[in-house]
Length: 416
Picture: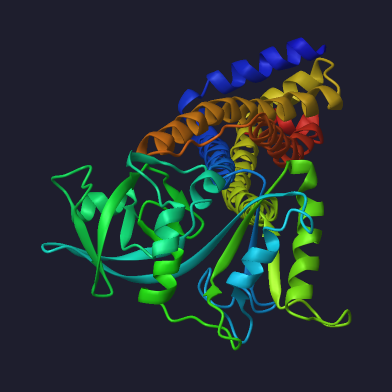
């Protein structure tokens, strides 16, 4: 018997019991659909995270106080232990002779506190920044202006608000230029409203109020080093190009080690990391998560495979006389084996194809339910799910097919 004839007989046997075949395929359909949906969601998370960090700016390096073992033990951007970064460090990094690959340096002082108006108040992230902050972050006002050098020099009480701050504190005024907000009981005049930036690894960037860094250091936060210099929470450095990020990191490390008088045998009291480092870490996490979700969904495929084996065993029992008759007229053991094996594989493959459509539908629903998020159906997920479903049919169909092929034709013909 040729292969096409075996396929035709297998499909005819399956269509003879349409409801049973459909219920048998259900486990495969759900399993493949779940695998594709969850893997697509995981891939979408990876793309979303990368887009968020790409939107933070380009060719950026972040310097925070504390060595690698303690830098992330507290909230992002806070001073940890005895480590510190100061205004003097910022000045040193701005030296083009010592750091030729540094394009811009943007120091930041961070505090989470209550920001209020006469009618509304909210807890927000307040950042003391310099004029370089906007171009480094690629984040600019949609109304008004950003902090200027004159504001830094005069320690002006001016503020630039993120979109979420405006929506919360000034619900009836999308551009509250000239209005005042109170931060730590100090009044600030609003001079600008930033464009909507969205979320980042540390929460929504639009929930940020920016004030001159000198005002922040002298009026809102008391952060001085042992030498009396003002401290900063973090320093954002823009490298000349993506290819020069490693060289820029080395220049930063050399300057800061010299500034902090660190011996060659001692570890750094600061940490430098790039956008690529962050994306890589989050990428590894999301890859593990995607694999884990895919493995959980794969359990459904195993359950579906057990269902296929069960039904095929029932089918072998029901068709014992048919098997005996076919052997009596000359069918070989391999013909019987292939017939039942193809039936099992047909169930799993057809179920897999339907599951692919179900998975694509599930991914589309997730994308529509979550604003700004798009589940990505990859060819890898489709191929993996289809291959796995076919393998399930093959593996779980072998035993019933072999059992059918080993039946004695005389006893099979006598079976009632």
